[in-house]
Figure 1 (cartoon, rainbow, N blue to C red):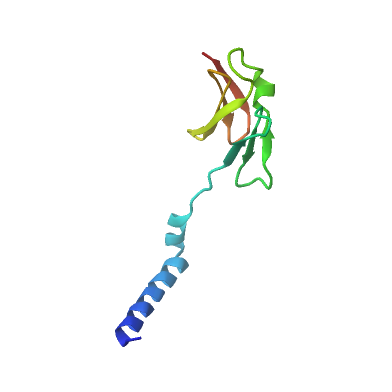
Figure 2: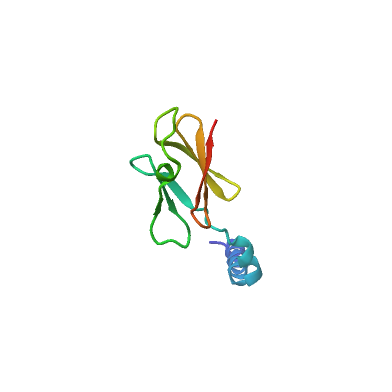
Amino acid sequence: MSKQSLGTLLVMAVAAAAFVMDPALAEDRKVEAEPEARISADGRAVEVKRAADKESIRVPVLDRCGNPVPGPPKILHLKFYEGDLLAHYGKHCWARISMKTLEVECSGCD
């Protein structure tokens, strides 16, 4: 290895160490973990795991909102929107789940 490549390697190592050690730069790298959400095996609930939770929490969407009139009684799609989780179920029904409180708001069917 030449002296120039050793010098380049040393400069890169010092810059990386300064980046890791500087608290101001470390704050910029913090990324809040987005909660994980999935549809339960029976399709009637959502399993949510937030950063503060040790295990997934079951949120019973269809037990709170009831079975939809048109379409199958199961959750079809999940989407994060403005800090909440939207659950689409039945044919044209949806519910909003608050990620802070895990409260279910049945938005209705169209």
